Length: 268
Image 1 (tube, helix red, strand yellow):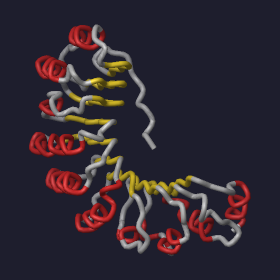
Image 2 (tube, rainbow, N blue to C red):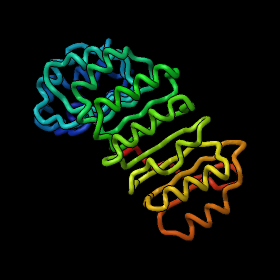
Image 3 (cartoon, rainbow, N blue to C red):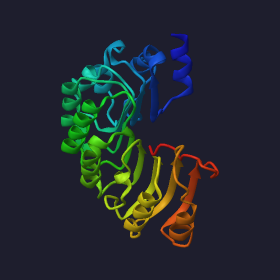
Image 4 (cartoon, rainbow, N blue to C red):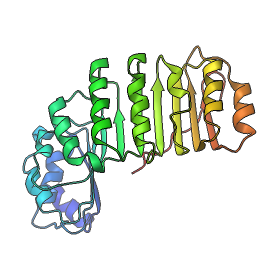
């Protein structure tokens, strides 16, 4: 309780809070404390690696937040409690790296998919699970601005292209880790403008040239290319299509003799 009182005095008028798995009880005590009233100030909650089974009174916490604008769920598990909240909330970010029950995820997207702006799918899913998950995102989420997909196989290329096409109007940040099929970078599926594009791939000259030719009408503010071992030399295409043109404002290339570049911060 002493920790709660210290935080109470230090963080009056709190607007944003990050709740981590190791400190859920502390934050819960803070939000329910009679000495601390954030009902009319707290507008953003981020759950980071939280197992919602260990949180109690979540419905009570959400019920007293009057100006809550966005909820972000990053690599969390056991979502049933947050799905069953009686008070509606705007789920703005959903980053998945742990296997969840598809029925629970479908319920969550059915309730909050229209609000979702940031979606990421990590390494913890097999091929069939990825197919189902992408299908759910295509069905329920039309307003995604940030999309991060890791290690996708040839068999679901069409699903990824369908998803990008489905959200093209709003998509602004795209990060794809491509293991096998470089048809994903043919450039034709991209929106006309991207703030940030990150490609991690084992690239062949012909595929990369096709990407640059097919995306000549696409303006990219920040382009990051991470070349995996075995990639062809694409330096001449970089000079011909990117450096001489004005389609890319900032360029960073990592691997195969190129200098390293920095990843931008997550956009929320």
